[in-house]
Image 1: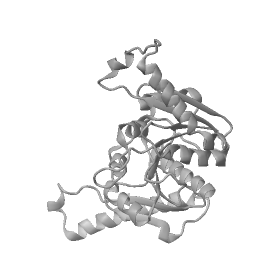
Image 2 (image 1 turned 90 degrees about the vertical axis):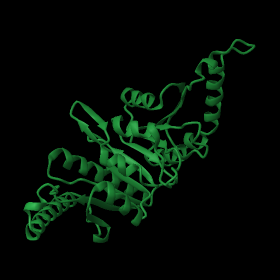
Image 3 (image 1 turned 180 degrees about the vertical axis):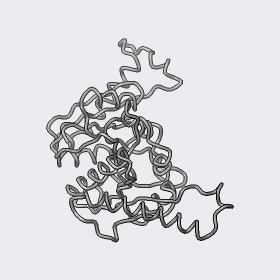
Image 4 (image 1 turned 45 degrees about the vertical axis):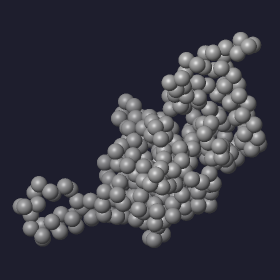
Length: 303
C-alpha cells in the first residue's frame, strides 16, 4: 500500500473515513491524499455573489472548508509519510476516479451516508458510482470507523477463469487485512440450481433432486479448489456454502457472523476495469450495516 485517497465530505462530522484512514496509513506507512469535494445545488448562481472585499462566496466557502479539514488532519499527519490536502468544487466520484488514475492510488476510503429507514447502511450515489467505476479497491466505512474484527469474504469461485481470479483477489485482500488487524475471516459463497421453472412440468421429483445434487457437487468442488490455494486452512465453522441467491443469503450470513467488513468483487469488461458493480452485489450492499470493501479484478495489495 503506497498511496491511498480519503474522501472526507463535510457531512462526515465524526470523521469516520479519516479515523480509519489514519489506522491504515500507520500500518503501511502510506502517503495519503485527502479530498473534500463541495457539490453545487440549484442555488449555485448565488455562489458567484461578491463580498465587500471582492471575493466570491464560492471562494470563501472553499477557504472555510480547507481550514476546517486541515484542523481535522493532525492524527493522520502523525501516521503517514505525506498528506496532500485538496478541497474543490465538483462531482465527488468524478474527482476521485480522476485522481486514482493520475496518482496511482491503491485504495480509496470514504464514509457511508448514514443509515436508511430500514436500518441498513445508506451508501448513496457517490459510493455506488465508485463501486462501479473506480479501478482500485474502495472501502466505504459503515457504522464504525474502527479496524475490523470479523471479515466476511464473499466469493464466486466458479471455474470460469475471470471469476476465479476475482475470487482469489477478494480472498487475498481479506486475508491481508486480517493479518494486520488480527481479525478473523469467514468465507461465503452462494449456489443454486439452474432456473427450472419452465421445465418443471417435465421433471419429476427424482430428476429435480439429481440436478440439485449435481449443482451442489460443482459448487463444493469450486469452493474447495479456491480454498486450497489459500495460505492457511480455514476453520470449517467459518466456511459458508449456502444454497440460494447471493443477494438473499449473503446479507444474512454477514449478520449471523457479526461481520464488520464485507469484501467482495466488482465485475468489469476487458476494456474498462471495474465499470460495473453488478446487480447482485449492488443488492447486497443496500442490505448491510457494516463496512464494504469492493475489489476490482486487477487490484493487488503489496505489503
